[in-house]
Amino acid sequence: MKTVFLMGDSIRMGYDRYVRDALADGVVVLSLAAGVPLATLAQPLADGTAIARVMPNTPALLGEGMAAISPNAHCTQEQIETVSQLLRATGRVVVVPEKQQDAVTALSGSGPAYVFAVAEALIEGGVLLGLPRATATELAEQTLYGAATMIRDSGTHVSLLREQVT
Image (cartoon, rainbow, N blue to C red; front, side, top):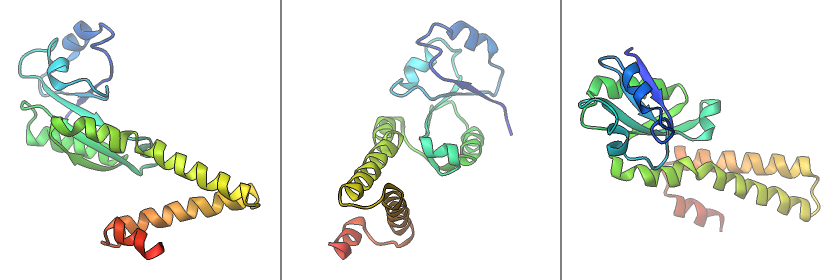
């Protein structure tokens, strides 16, 4: 596997000259900086540098994450596959055009926070209805896990799954 050089927020922090000097031929620069376009990332780097924006999410910590890669025109198919292999260690991976990366950030990058808010509401609702917190937590956890599994594995549209309950 080729070497991958990781770069977070170095350009905005003024470390760009160190990044440029550290790059070797064939290295892919990966940016996890949300909202920073490829064109901005490329400014301090040598022409022709392979760069990819990457947006993972927090379930990656458990190997259940979702990451999206947006490579620039200088990335080869081999480099994109290398980056994909690296990220598959943290979960699933898709390649999207850069124009979709902000939407990925909103949906998948921030998505776990919305799921956690739903979980919190389910648990607190159960407690308010008289369930012990441990029971409410177990019910919410398994309900969310089961529902997510149905979405992924059933092949049924989420609207139909919801209608089957309501």
